[in-house]
Amino acid sequence: MTGPRPGPLAISLGDPAGIGPELIAEAWRRRAGADLPPFAVTGGAETLRAAAASRGIALPVQPIADLAEAPGVFARALPVLGAADGDWAPGSPSAEGARLAFDSLAAATRLAAEGQAAAVVTAPVAKGWLARVGFDHPGQTEYVAAACGLAPADAVMMLAGPNLRAVPLTVHVPLSEVPPSLSQDLIVRRARIVVAALARDFGLTQPRLAVAGLNPHAGEEGRFGDEETTIIAPAVAQLRDEGIEVTGPHPADALFTPRARARYDAALCMYHDQALIPLKALDFDEGVNVTLGLPLVRTSPDHGTAFDIAGKGLADPGAMIAAIAMAGACAARRAEARARP
Image 1 (cartoon, rainbow, N blue to C red):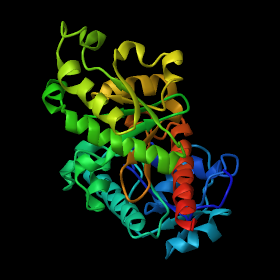
Image 2 (tube, one colour):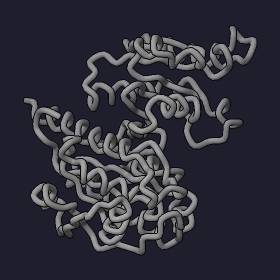
Image 3 (cartoon, rainbow, N blue to C red):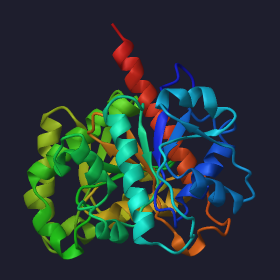
């Protein structure tokens, strides 16, 4: 990246039984080639060493007492802030591991919320195991939003890769609950957040949105459902009246073709899989989960803990590297904006 570097990033360890620790180690090993900004991991020094060894990485780990030390350490060792740690048991999640993941997430988020970290990057966690140790949020996105004092509706998940940016307007809800969860207000409110974030964090001066329909053929004028005519189209019209460049509702089966993707900067989708299936099909090894609408920058690799391949050297570090790079780029844009007179 060009321009001024942001401050150090804080990275949470993720579930120690998953692939997060080994991918963090791999990202540090490839830091120069990927031009990554300095980062520190909140806890898990021995876990990181053991996970790195499984990939043949002799990882130098340097404990630090303050995040400000990270840039001076980063070239020669992976900075780790905090003493929290545990046994490395790849593929065998436990309550102890979930507590370590929770503690690491809380520490990294706190550093970003307090302005000590330029951004937070969260490694994958197992939500079921976190719930057993007192984590009462649907996911890390909602946790970070709450830590910033925001309601879940004010934090928007965007999945971003080299070929697509996609936003699920409803996220962790059963498919049967999607239609009653949709409203004109929800679509408009989240579209505004997306447009503002694309301008602030991604440098797009006039973001273009495309809105997917809910039903087959976008409802076919009411033959296959009326949400397009009663909810989605009025929301699109309201956004246009506000000066936002937006089209839709589009049939979802045609929205992600190469020709269609060239006409928008982000696709707004009605439910989780409508957004994540095309993103993972196109950009699985480089997909990044970005939380929009926050006073801080938060990214995460768009994959899970992958317990089945943890410790086997099979996990691709591309998404973790992309998440760190994107967090650094977004943080740099915010820093540049603050520096302008």
